[in-house]
Length: 143
Image (cartoon, rainbow, N blue to C red):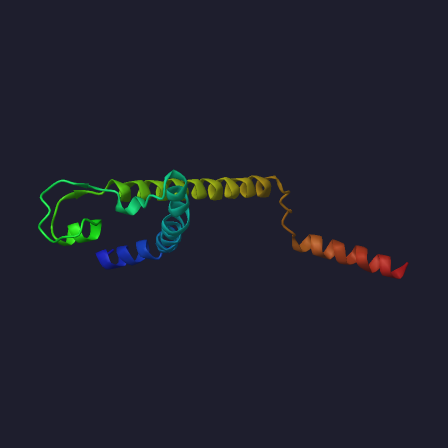
């Protein structure tokens, strides 16, 4: 078997395609969660804590050139080393929320699997069963 044939057999397996779909959906879902954290949750936390904008919390680790505004974006553009711990807080909250959502999704899926496993599985219908059922039906019609 050539390498291309082996790769083709690998790539068309259901697990690989499922993984690709999962990664794509996960990336999109990550952007949604990032927006929820950045645009909804962090402003509320900032308002409760004291109107902090966590994205702009940082420590300057070098000399700030004259005329550069002391904002995270301006300092990074000027090449000043900064420790952006506010961004780390935002990403950490983002991760915690995403992990919490995934936990509940997996819990729900496991619950559905458990209830599905408890459902009785109907026996396979054989041709003999069909004939017998037709005979019963026909005998009931005659009476």
